[in-house]
Amino acid sequence: MKSHLVVLLAAAALVGCAKEQTRYGDARSVETLTNQYGSTDLQMMAESMARSMLQAPVIASSNLPIVTVQEVRNKTSEYIDTRAITDSIRSELQKGGRVRFAVDQAGMNPQVDELKRQQSELYAKDQRAEMGQMVGAQYRLEGNIISIVKQVKDAKDVYYKLNLQLWNIRNGLLEWSDEKEIRKTTTRG
Amino acid sequence: MNPKWIIAASAAAALVAGCATKKGFEQPGFAYGCPIGETKVSSMDDLVKAKVMAEGRRTTIQATEMRCSKSGDLLRIDANLNNDSKNVKRISYKFRWIDREGMRAWEEEPWKPVMLYENSNLVINTISPTNKAADFRLILRSEE
Image 1 (cartoon, rainbow over the protein chains, first blue to last red):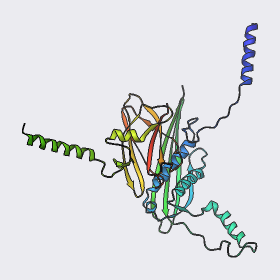
Image 2: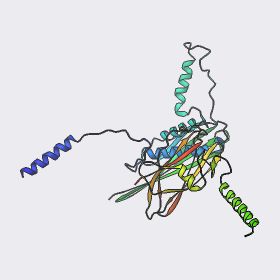
Image 3: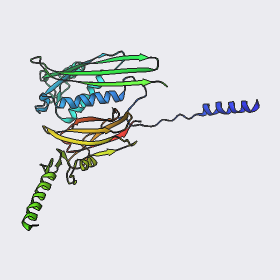
Image 4: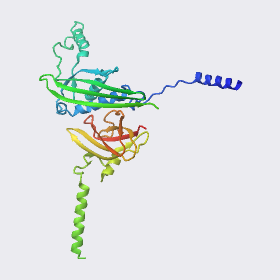
């Protein structure tokens, strides 16, 4: 009986003393902790879409088209920051030097505020940004992300589909569209 | 045998061999459309060996074929992966982009997970993210 007590106490002490450890990991490794939308899904969708857009005739023609990013509607049952997807796509395309981006709806207020601020007498006249010089986008990027979730006792299947479209603002033509699908299945036991 | 016949046969054999090695290597520094630089590549196996690397956990999945083409000033790549085992295999892959000076032309790509059915092939494809990418490596790792 005594020995049992000693073992229990020793185990409790060990659990209590279990050291917490923090390490840096590879931000680009495959993450499969749960089957919810994760970093690998975000990275794969963004890369796949950006590379596909590079092949769209309006972008491949190297005329540096001006694009504005609109909303990617989240039609899934979970919270997904769709802005993070379009931000990653924008970064990849901008770095590749193929596309220029015009200020989008979300960035319009800070842009206008700064323009107005520079009209003050506090700024040198020859260096301040003039009103009426902003450049409008030729194309707008928008899309949807949907999910289909199926669950039985010991298995859960999640299917994601991101669809993006690049619309010509002047004539309303669809210039490019593509989809990226991801399926993840979690089983127990 | 008539020496004339021997010379003719040798010439024909040399011609055939010459044509065979030329196949897919029309442009110097390229094999099957893929940039090879100074590397000696005389077959698809050589090309795959020069371009495919393993990092992390090794996988039994083999790249068996690789073809490249130009899309404007960007490089399009198709690579065939083969699973000759009787089990489904899960791996991840990424491409590494290298510029003309041998430096990285682009940041490290994310690992992309894929599943290969038993006894099956899967073609993965990509396009270079920038025209600074003059060369590439395909990197594979097991996800099992």
